[in-house]
Image (cartoon, rainbow, N blue to C red):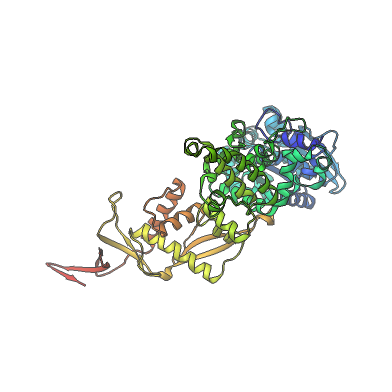
Length: 581
């Protein structure tokens, strides 16, 4: 019996057994020490608290790890009692910083009167040489600050201003001590933290050898799907980490950020399927509860509706990436060659494939009439995604096939500085897309002018366009900027920007880059997030202002589209005469 399996089952909400899904319940569990990851953000807060008395406020979504950070800080100062766990609020002396540390585990658990009293205590603690950590969701935090202002306990700021100032702090999330009225706070918005960087560490913890030692000694281990999942993940850990990290990066960049709790829920469920050491297993259990099926929310060939309660699985189902063709489909489905898979996965899927397909050899007409062959091919693709033996090049190709043709490049440029060739290619892609967006046609050659025509919305391509301005090729630059996190060096990354000679810059997130890439390749119509569409329209408006013609002679310029290409015509009107160039 391995109690760690029971612990993993308690970390997701796919069924009612989730007593440890909340951090306050986890911290007293015997496996929490082995599973907990000390975050760099926690180390940053510890350093700030060591310097001087500080009031730290942690806000964010449920499951973002606020309570775990309180545990990390208390443990760092050696003032966390394993037997007591975390109280609703408490104050303890730390010899390491030679002062008292007051904490509120969660403001939402307190009555309104207690929230007001305890937040004031935390804010004023600095005056008594006391540090404090306050955990609160945005709503209670705003409301309590307003109550304190209304009662005259916070001065030098109005209720309206405090809301605006707190929201601005949450948006910037710079981790700096800032004055709010007559008090100073260090506010951290956990909802702005990139949790994707923690995924490799989480998988490393889940597959720690010491946690699976009881399974290695179990007499049932050979037929156990849970232990097989552990061994399979260990066998292909690097590729699995790369794919799962990329999947969560895709969600993050498409405004579907996951909390730490939601990430752990999917990974823990994928290891066990909420089965345990006493579950009844049969000959198909290893395939039915294989990591590749569970991670996607399947039990064997069929969707497990309970797994849809896990948000990360639900989002993965929406993408339908196990329905997309890959370069290995021919090997798998025509040649029945599964050698690209890891050893353990090869054994599992070969057995299942041969059993399921045998009956269609005897009755080939049934092959096209039933859904099972299609579902089996999807299962093979799921296994290929997670357990294919890929090098970096083939993994990038797989990511591009599954998510977006530009995705692997975006990940690469997110991690490192691009070279000259990559920079030139990126500029060619984006300028070609801008030409189509602004003019309505694809550019005939690189670095040509981009004209700014007057366009009537919804009329399609116009053969003759009145020009209001133009950009030269050297007016546009595509640059990378290195963004550093105050809290966590693991979050440092590069971002892509369009820079114009007018000194204006526009960030190019993944979804916008994907849109540019599709447009540059000739896509006639493609969907774009409304907020990004608004951003493009705003950029277009600014370009018309910055690069409009300023002719003293009042020259009219027309762009004429012909079968032989575009032609520029200039008109000047002088009384009854028109001069044409």
